[in-house]
Every structure is written in C-alpha cells, then in structure tokens.
Image 1 (tube, rainbow, N blue to C red):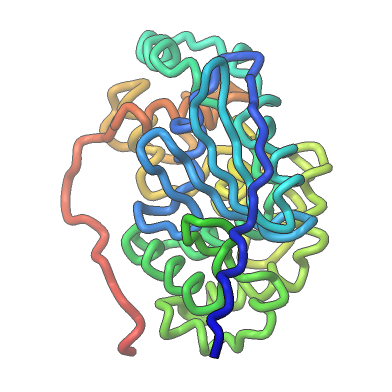
Image 2: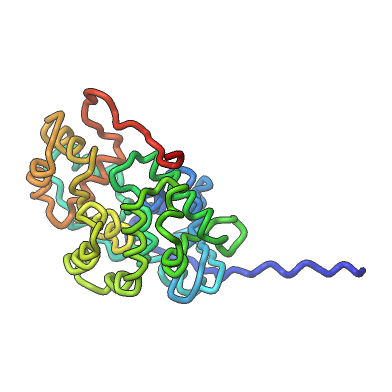
Length: 309
C-alpha cells in the first residue's frame, strides 16, 4: 500500500489589531477563564488561545503582542467572524474613563490597571453554562463539573492548540437530567441548564437589548437569578455594572475594602457601590485583581461531591 501524504494543515486567517486606547488582553480575558484547567481558553506566557462558537461556526483565536498592537490568528469555520469580534472581545466598547473613583484605594488600583477592560464575547450560552454550574457550590466543585461536561459532551476546537468547545444547545437538550449526575451536577442545576438550552435562540439575541432588558431576559428562566445573570452579563455583554448579588465572598470583600467592615450584606455592599453605579462590577474586579479579602472567621464551605451518591 502506498502511503498517502498527510492532509495539509489548515491555514489560519490573520489580522493585526491596533486598539485606540490602552488594553491589556491578559487582564481583560482572564475574567473568562473558569479555573486553570479550563479547556476552552489557555494563557501561554504572553500568548492567549480561546475557542468559541460563532454564528458562522467554531473558531479558535490566538492573540500575541506585536509592534503597536496585537497579532491575531484564527482557525475554523468561524475564523472571519472571530477576527471581526476581537475589538469587542478586548473591550473596545468599554468606557473605563467613565469610572471616577472617590475612594483612595480604588483610585490607586484603577491607576495600576489602565488596560483592564470589560470585553464582550457575544456568546450567551457559553457564558451562562459555567455560571449555572457555579451556583451555590465551591469553586473547586464547579470547575471540576465544568471540565467534565465539556470533555464528555463538547468537541475539539479547530486549530493547533487542542482546545475544546463547550456543548451546543442542541447537544445539551439531548442529555437526560440524570446523566448530569456523574459530572457532579444534581437535578436542580441540570434542569436549569436544560431550560437555558431550550431557550438558546432568545438568550443569544439578548445581546442586542439594553443591559437591563438583557438581564431581565436571562432572569425570566426559572433557576437563573440575579447572581447567575450578572455573571453571564459581564462576560457575554461586557457589562461593567453587573454586580453578583448573592455571592458568598463579594459582599465581605467590598465592605472590608471600602469601609473596613469585616462582614457585609448584599444591601450594605450595594450601598457602598452606589456612587459607582454604571461601573460597580469594575470596582469588584479591581478589588479581586488586588487580592482583597475580608478577615476569615470560622470554617470554610466544605468541598463536596455528589458523584457517589
């Protein structure tokens, strides 16, 4: 038998993006990563790889710094769409200049991170899926379930890096709720995922709505509350005001950083953030990047597993 030559490697599309204002892709895109093992995005030194589904098909993008901007390569059926989306992804529509910090700590943190922006992925289901999985569990549990779901029901992304794509809504709809159990997802979260997959078309269209209307569309699905909607809106729509009310850690962090109160409620957090309405999520992100944390008292939330139940 005569050996057949290997198929030629797919040639990527290429473009150089020169932003009109300072942008740090590392600070901007790390908000999209769900744990170091997230198979949909990788940070290799100064190189960033990201896999996504676009309206034109799957795509993988590679972003590297170059003179005066960033060199972007893209593979897959959605490569052209992904290249066109890079400015939005890196926060071209964000307006950090609208953030006028009054608190000395926030002024300093904002000064140190001039390139941190809120970009938008325009991928609602991809952003909503990890947010649902992260409901009311520890980060370790959520990240393990997210990876397991992708490896079981997702698919390989195009390009040379070997990334993975999250499952399509069609694939999710075909999964019986009890098949989520071995992935560490109980019936409650499994059913929310299935509901979101059923309404995927309407949810993806939410990006064309005003921010408040987009949040209402997300929250109209039973099981998607204020916290989950905010987590989704920051990533999918680049909303710098979407505050995760109901978070286990954020109220304490905000109240400690801005008022030196070691414990806080959602109500007190929102009171302290009110002067920054329109940019409240930026405040939270700056505090998280700085490693701010309230003093710890008492036991931590335990890590659990439902796989063996």
